[in-house]
Length: 91
Image (cartoon, rainbow, N blue to C red; front, top):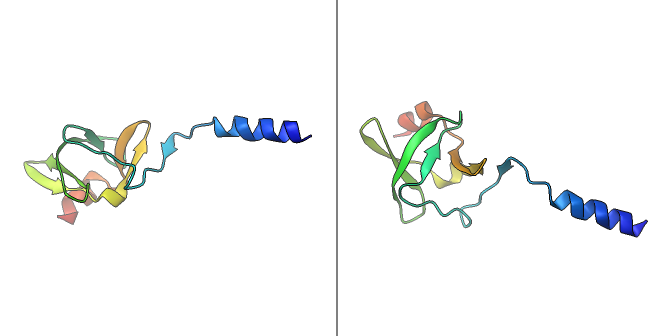
Protein backbone atom coordinates (compact mmCIF):
# COMPACT_ATOMS: atom_id res chain seq x y z
CA UNK A 1 0.00 0.00 0.00
CA UNK A 2 2.85 2.39 0.83
CA UNK A 3 4.41 1.80 -2.57
CA UNK A 4 1.22 2.91 -4.30
CA UNK A 5 0.96 6.03 -2.16
CA UNK A 6 4.56 6.95 -2.96
CA UNK A 7 4.02 6.30 -6.67
CA UNK A 8 0.91 8.49 -6.71
CA UNK A 9 2.69 11.24 -4.81
CA UNK A 10 5.67 11.21 -7.16
CA UNK A 11 3.49 11.19 -10.26
CA UNK A 12 1.54 14.17 -8.89
CA UNK A 13 4.80 16.10 -8.58
CA UNK A 14 5.40 15.79 -12.31
CA UNK A 15 2.23 17.70 -13.17
CA UNK A 16 3.12 21.26 -14.08
CA UNK A 17 0.36 23.87 -13.90
CA UNK A 18 -0.04 26.39 -16.72
CA UNK A 19 0.28 29.24 -14.23
CA UNK A 20 3.34 29.13 -12.06
CA UNK A 21 3.64 31.62 -9.22
CA UNK A 22 6.80 33.60 -9.57
CA UNK A 23 8.14 35.21 -6.45
CA UNK A 24 10.19 38.38 -6.58
CA UNK A 25 13.36 36.51 -5.63
CA UNK A 26 12.83 34.03 -8.48
CA UNK A 27 11.99 36.48 -11.26
CA UNK A 28 14.89 37.53 -13.40
CA UNK A 29 13.37 40.07 -15.73
CA UNK A 30 15.89 41.74 -18.01
CA UNK A 31 15.86 44.43 -20.66
CA UNK A 32 14.35 43.20 -23.93
CA UNK A 33 12.19 40.54 -22.20
CA UNK A 34 8.57 40.75 -23.34
CA UNK A 35 5.82 41.61 -20.85
CA UNK A 36 2.16 40.67 -21.29
CA UNK A 37 -0.93 42.16 -19.63
CA UNK A 38 -3.68 40.36 -17.68
CA UNK A 39 -5.54 39.66 -20.92
CA UNK A 40 -2.52 37.96 -22.47
CA UNK A 41 -1.82 40.82 -24.86
CA UNK A 42 1.72 42.01 -25.41
CA UNK A 43 2.47 45.21 -23.51
CA UNK A 44 5.92 45.57 -24.96
CA UNK A 45 9.54 44.79 -24.40
CA UNK A 46 11.16 45.70 -21.12
CA UNK A 47 12.99 48.99 -21.58
CA UNK A 48 14.93 48.81 -18.31
CA UNK A 49 14.70 47.22 -14.85
CA UNK A 50 14.60 49.24 -11.62
CA UNK A 51 16.98 48.57 -8.75
CA UNK A 52 14.15 46.65 -7.06
CA UNK A 53 13.59 44.46 -10.12
CA UNK A 54 10.43 46.08 -11.48
CA UNK A 55 10.34 46.25 -15.27
CA UNK A 56 9.90 49.51 -17.14
CA UNK A 57 7.91 49.25 -20.34
CA UNK A 58 7.38 51.89 -22.99
CA UNK A 59 3.67 52.26 -23.76
CA UNK A 60 2.35 55.02 -25.97
CA UNK A 61 5.61 56.93 -25.83
CA UNK A 62 5.73 56.83 -22.01
CA UNK A 63 8.04 54.71 -19.89
CA UNK A 64 5.95 53.08 -17.17
CA UNK A 65 7.13 51.09 -14.17
CA UNK A 66 5.14 47.87 -13.68
CA UNK A 67 5.13 46.66 -10.05
CA UNK A 68 7.11 43.46 -9.70
CA UNK A 69 4.53 42.17 -7.22
CA UNK A 70 1.97 41.96 -10.06
CA UNK A 71 4.09 39.72 -12.28
CA UNK A 72 3.91 35.95 -12.62
CA UNK A 73 5.00 33.51 -15.29
CA UNK A 74 2.11 32.24 -17.40
CA UNK A 75 2.89 29.76 -20.17
CA UNK A 76 6.56 30.75 -19.89
CA UNK A 77 5.72 34.44 -20.39
CA UNK A 78 6.17 37.31 -17.94
CA UNK A 79 2.60 38.43 -17.29
CA UNK A 80 1.25 41.19 -15.06
CA UNK A 81 -2.09 40.88 -13.30
CA UNK A 82 -2.88 44.41 -14.50
CA UNK A 83 -4.58 45.38 -17.75
CA UNK A 84 -3.06 47.94 -20.12
CA UNK A 85 -5.68 50.48 -18.96
CA UNK A 86 -4.80 49.90 -15.28
CA UNK A 87 -1.10 50.32 -16.00
CA UNK A 88 -1.67 53.55 -17.94
CA UNK A 89 -3.96 54.88 -15.18
CA UNK A 90 -1.48 54.01 -12.42
CA UNK A 91 1.03 56.56 -13.61
